[in-house]
Length: 162
Image (cartoon, rainbow, N blue to C red; front, side, top):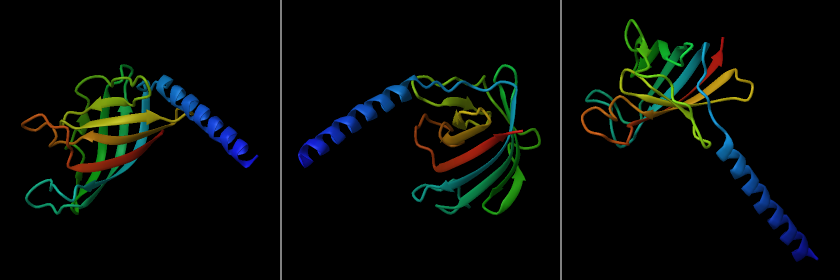
């Protein structure tokens, strides 16, 4: 009898995981339009690759600011950053802008924003439509001189609608 119960539980779990997988593939992350959110993010540099001659591998950085999506899903990102203890404006006086409109995610993949400093963010939106969660998928060095898929940092953040 115990084997029967465990067998039924196992079949149920396999069926449920297949259903969850099927649902994840049908989720589409649409890029927001006319959306402003306040974000905070943290970054840790790779322990194997430093960002520059003056940085220490594993060094943490933090960011805070605003992300604005216009009516065409073009993005402007402004705020402050603390990189290696030095506080500066993100992207300089004008912030960062997207190089093209945000690309909608399909088949369970996140939406993508390419920024003017050669970095790229992947983002998803919560079910209420009030919060974005994002990760850095390409940093400023990823595409610097030769195509590379390796970023030298890990950055995650949350952006809440204002």
